[in-house]
Length: 97
Image (cartoon, rainbow, N blue to C red; front, side, top):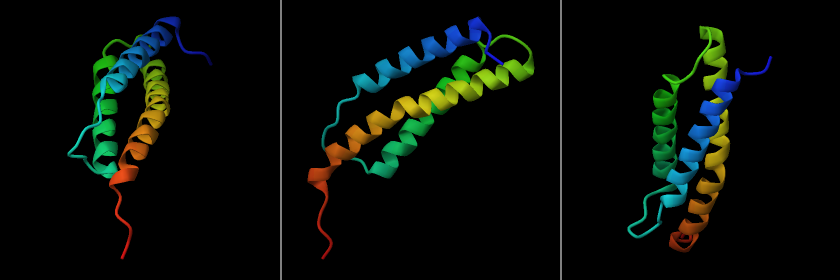
């Protein structure tokens, strides 16, 4: 079953704003660990889910499906950002002794 158009619009808006957030990030020293960056991204996703959950329409089941879709899309859109951060960390890795 397709999502309501209004919820698809909310998801689209959320993804656009999330993309802007990710694109604004500048990687500088001192670096934080990959694990810490994943935690930060997870927190951003939780914030976006919380913020945009109030904008969803339809019955509870429809809203839950829309939120699941939003969470899936946010996670998917964060993957290139995390890959970029992993690449940034490469020069800072020390070989195991």
